Image 1: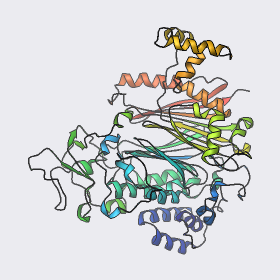
Image 2: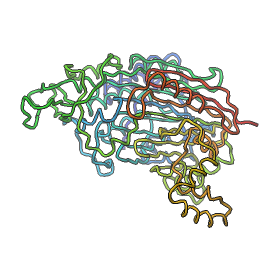
Image 3: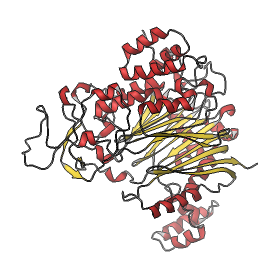
Image 4: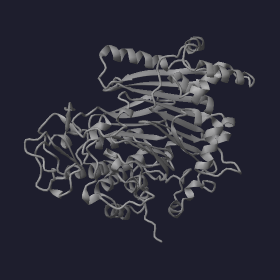
Length: 583
């Protein structure tokens, strides 16, 4: 059987001066023009500074036959130097709208892109809209460019979570979060992502973009643009306008790189502004000319494609700046809808999940290195372990990760001979964990947008006093009497029975640190300028929240803080903290 050569491998070969013409010819013939041109540009840029190709990395072999046979689950015979896996991830987050409800009208794939989907690839849930209507095989094609593969997936009413051979991929109706480790070529898939969003959802613009990563442990082993932060920034600037790049922390030490674009509130104008004006092939379900305003979402002009949806409800909308996507042949080729209104029209909310999406977005990322070898033993496969999800469950229970957010739907995976990944969903929020336990390159990351408080919680005495007046105290007392024989206090029993997750950021960091026991860690906290009820903050509210953010990044038991930095961006704030374990 002939196995197709991935575009990323061809680009790598060409960048090292091997088979350049053949590689470019294959790129032009086998993948879409946008992706081919993007990779070709990288080849040209790297031609004079190329380094030898990196060896196969943990979790995923370069052997394509092995990849097809799923042997990437076993890294025992990897040719890569022992203990040199690049744990720190590249993280790309693309928002195509500021909120899920703005894309509720996008529910049907255009006719020319509809293909049969196998039962294995079918994703659950009937109320799918926005980016969630894209079939899994389409995402698989995109992930192949990145050099990773889906191991498992879970869904709920709000989102999809794909556990990858190299980290995680989350799909909301209005945004995508792609996080990949090792020597994956994440940015090489950016043109493909934009193409998918346009072809399947009619989304020609983005609202805003975030790309970030920690300092690489082995930067010389990265491929293409990922070898240098300046090259990554240049690549992103070719695709987006209004982008800004930052290096947060010590440039000559452990730091964090961030690229983000400003919000572009006209991102859906090409979809929502066409009112009472339809092409001849559009079906309007016998609406009369004087009926309420009607909008076709995702129409493809002269292509003859069926409209994605017809929606009739009108609300206050977004308006403003130019599209953040730089001019691109593939994006400009599609006909856009003419602008005739500054209002937004959306589908009536038929989803019970609508209220589960929080208006205020807060994301915490904890990036840990120099992990305690004793604590890391639990992330190695044992003789009686079954690798994969079964082994992942063992790790969940043994480490306490299963109890971090007990109400979350958890999907975990244990690699061979070591390594662990997990995704978890809780309503419209997620958390994800990835662990590289080898001593020479030990690394763990924890990321979540599950809300936690920024204030310090009350003392145990005050909580206990207030709890004495609550309903159910008698049953708690009975449980406490039995527990005292086991050496537990009544308060501990009540806490265990009602625990739903960390109450504050300090609680969250402390619980994560207790599991992984890092020598150093970087913590980032993003917080949007939107209130819980969906309103923009006043200046006073913003300043108050910023003070709480800075204070929350304060003392962590057992650690000394070496950096604490606040950045105020358009629409959100960031606090970065760096910590070193006390001797």
